[in-house]
Picture 1 (cartoon, rainbow, N blue to C red):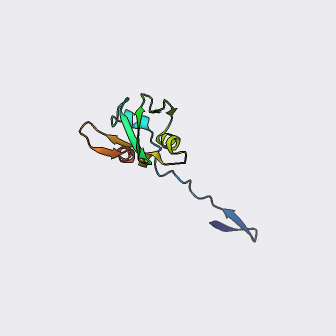
Picture 2: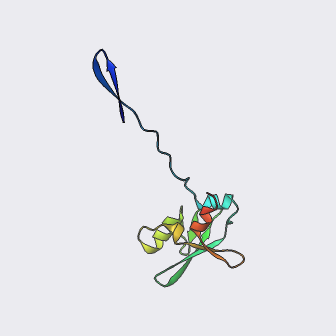
Picture 3: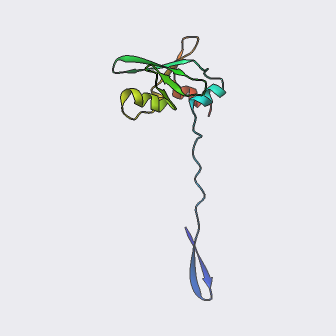
Length: 113
C-alpha cells in the first residue's frame, strides 16, 4: 500500500510497511509437555515403521532416547532417525497413559495451546 502526498505541487509516494506477521503458535517440545505435567521423564513412546514397533524414552530434559541408544532433541528427529526420511514426529509417535489410552503426541501437544 502506498500513500500519495502532494508536496510543492509534486507527488511524493510514501510506502507504508505492513504490520509484522506474528507466528500462529509457539513451538512446543517434549520438555514443554513435561513442564505441563502431561508426560513424565522416563515415559515410553512408540511408533510402528515397516511393520516393526520402535520404542523410545522421554528424558528429564525433554530429549528422546531411542532403542539403539541414540539421543535426539525432538520427536521429528527421532522419527527421521528410524525412517531415514524427514517426518513430523508429532503425528508419528504415540503415548499410552497409565489407563491404557493411546494418544498421538500431537494430541498431547494441543493441550498446551
